[in-house]
Length: 492
Image (cartoon, rainbow, N blue to C red):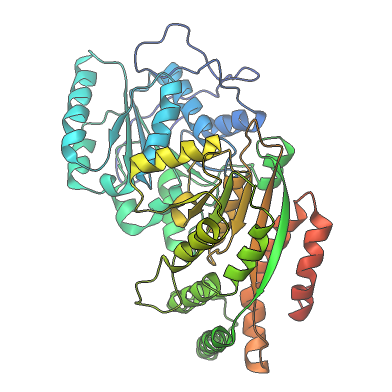
């Protein structure tokens, strides 16, 4: 098998063989050198992980693994690095993550594979000299392997970019939560001289960004078949079974008025485009609709009646532990400094009114404090974490047994990431429980009902799909049936 030539750079050609992977584990080296990839005895690869490895090698060292959140993408990627080390004496592993906490999480996994990673993020002085020294040692033959884990924001900086020219041909780049790397500035910063490329994401397609999605696939390679879905992950034991309880919430009168105004604006914008083009219009085709859709999502996310619904739910569940509360990350009023409003209100209801032991977990929570909270949560010292978006991507807290989703954006990625986060297996977890607050749209007139049907169709399809996979599927579907009837969406 040969690696394809990059259309811009002349890249070295490697002869890659399909990996021979033993049942239950990857390639195994008995006497590894310090810091060189080695498959640990404790890691047991599942059949779909072995298939993913084979598919990537068959595609000449390029490709995107679209695997359900929690199904072991990190382990699969590190197994590929071990196989490359065996086959071609791979010299450098470069992992790029969207967030700092994922860097430390990757570091923990890398250490299990005998790797000694450089954590390249934040202050240049903490990593740049270490990286340049190890790359020099690699070239001089005094070091066998270099592992670097960095963040997206560090990757695009001059300090890291200046080092990329010293990376050898035998380098593997892994893009974690790779959908983020489709953004123009990030995509331009990806190293063209590195030919071995692997993207990881449960949701590689970028929301409202076909061009960014294509540039991502152009760099890393397209999604490799077969995809590994949530249904696959549950049936094969990679994720746990779950109970799903939709909680229907009404908008207040003021919220309903704002909602109607937004829906009419969206409808008028679509109608104008249809008249101009003479063709029916699709929401995803209009970048200019994104601000209106985001306002609508914020309005739904911050709906006031979610707070009394939460109080009613948790009043009878005060002894429940290992619970995650997902809050809205913004308010409907653009420009107001109130992105933490719902989070603070939820923390007050739980902690002050109900005496529930909780802590907030946001992007502003320092890295060392996040690790402390994670351990307290695992041990049951904290009953719950009240979080915004920073727990959406990649964070591994398998002890979560219950999730209360107060808010989800219109982006399907967030919905998929969150449900996978809750379903990760854990020795003390037989089954997960998810409470999902779904806002009921107000009564609409003839001008807006069709727009609302189109807006609701995709969101409701996600809820229905998730209900269908739950152990209490019949009960969950009945709860959604009235909403489907109301908008003539019984075909979902």
